[in-house]
Length: 218
Image 1 (cartoon, rainbow, N blue to C red):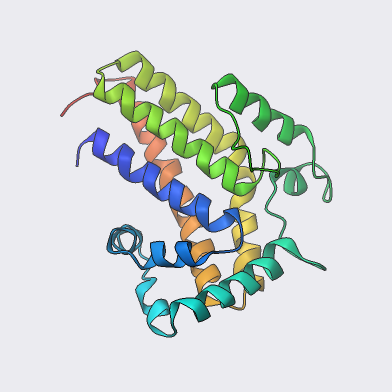
Image 2 (image 1 turned 180 degrees about the vertical axis):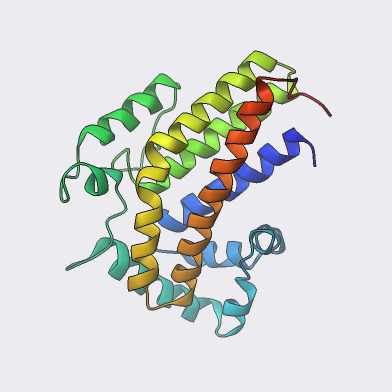
């Protein structure tokens, strides 16, 4: 696998994880999970969703996931808040310093929100999608042989990873594993944490490589 293919695979995983945390699962999302491409992608990351889908039909699985998503991430009552600011800026603050930092980064990259998005910039699904967009920008730079732009993308990815994603998502995932009553969300949270650990090491290696040699080898 070359660097461009690796970037595509990484962006696909971030995109899928972002969808998982976006909102209560729809029937289309369940069917997406059941697709061969997504199952192959998840199996490469060590997670077999196919076994869970075999235990019930699509509609039952969707209903179970919707109930569990609401209980875990929305409330009412005690839930696992999916916003960085709550984990880093004072416990219950929904718009804190880190929220503004994410908002400013999104705007500095020329990105905008979907018209139907009413959540905050530091929601886990936004942060994971932001990483996906950064990697897609890196992939495009590789395809266009723009080596300096590749280095810049990698530096931003690593900075965002270290200063934001790793500062709260592993703890968030631990809490999801602890509180989830469904294997699906336990497994997804475990996968999310493990993937970020893998990404941290990968980005360290990629950034170190970019200082020594070309990253544009086919």
